[in-house]
Amino acid sequence: MRLWMENAFLWLAFQFGQENIASKPMLFPTPAHFPIQYDGSKNSMIKTSEIIAKQMEIDIKEVTLEIYEQNIQEFSGDMGYKIFTQIDKESDEKLSAGLYFNKNEKGKYEIFIEKKNLQDPENLVATLAHEFSHIKILGEKRLDFNDESLTDLTTVVFGLGIFNANSSFKEHKTFYSYGYNSIGYLKQREWGYALALFAYYRRDENPEWIKFLSPNLKSDFKKSINFINANTDKVFIEKNDRNS
Image (tube, rainbow, N blue to C red; front, side, top):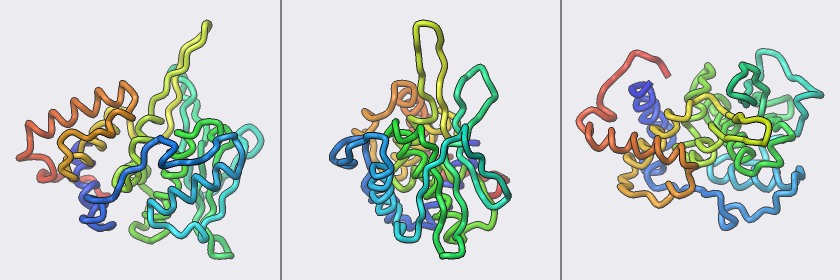
């Protein structure tokens, strides 16, 4: 997985511009970057999507955004791609957090966001970033097959990885129970390595943005960056056989 991730990262940098990826400003979970009143409304989702679209160099006018409720509607078929949320670490049950469909008859990409995400700004950004990554990979015809791990990694090179990494593992505790929510396809440790690759690629030796990572992700990031610094003769050099 490490070798695949390094090769995939370089492929993404080539696709979207090496200098562009090396210098693109990151977005943080702050009012300065997202000056939006998150009240669970569709308007807050639209405003968030406009910021993410600009960051990912997407024309928001080519995107149709809708909200759905998992327990009411279920979308199926071979044309759509889902991002999942796992609702409990003791269960294999997964619910869709977002859905992507290629351009419709009006020439617009169709993206559906599960309603619960509107109550969690970080999850909302992560889900939108993942679905917009489908536009960058599939919609812009850079690949003719879907790779969800590559789609997750795309959010990192566009400076949105903090949101998707944090959303990969969120604990929830009550007096009676404990569990976690997990959005996306990369595992927590893999997100830590992906963000470490991002920092290393940009020659950011001590990135201040790690303060926005959850404690678990921050730990995985530090372990990953230590590994990279101890193996600079291998990182971004070794090859593997997995196709991207």
